[in-house]
Length: 266
Image 1: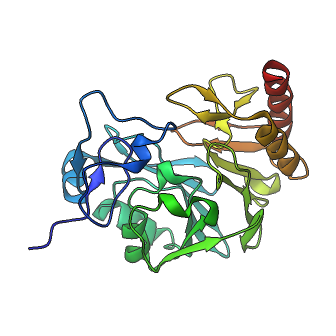
Image 2: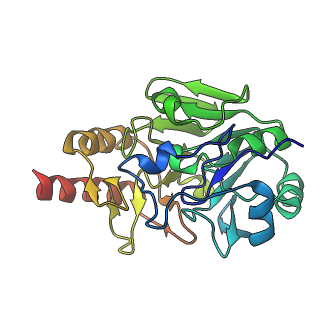
């Protein structure tokens, strides 16, 4: 009997083969827990987690699990007339999630902000017969290579009408956000993972190279990210966590936050 692909219990990355160490956790943007590296698999995740599926905004459904696994992010299902896109990924993929996503129209694609959220993306791609779009700058971090993964290059990539990926380079070289021009009833939405981090003070957002280890992002990267986002229209910013949403004035929030950041780190 073939063993299931292993999943790192600390970061959620699924690997194609058993291994002793997790490169993602060894990197300074994550960490190896004090108790050491621990491994699990999708069957065990299904046994320990329960699906959590909730609307997060107009046309956006959050998908995650409880009590929470690894980093604990939730994915976002973006529902458009041209098809549905899964933004970021969550480790749990069970019958309830599969049935709900199918009920909402399935997936035309999966796009992920950065390697910390790659997790079981190959499982999702195979179940929904959908390509996974990753920026080529983060190719080295893929734990389970698969033909479903499509690497894109450059600063932006269209996923269809009103949906565009933008490479900001924050947090990871391939760090990406998704702009939905038609989101928020036409006012625009930015799905940012933690490339642009929604923080408790919803009048600002954060930019970090390493969140758990509190390493700030390089000023030139933040400056470039702000300039990339400046011409985009968006009211809402959807972060990586449940209810981590800036509901209004999103572009001004980003620009204000970048100016403040650059003042403090100059």
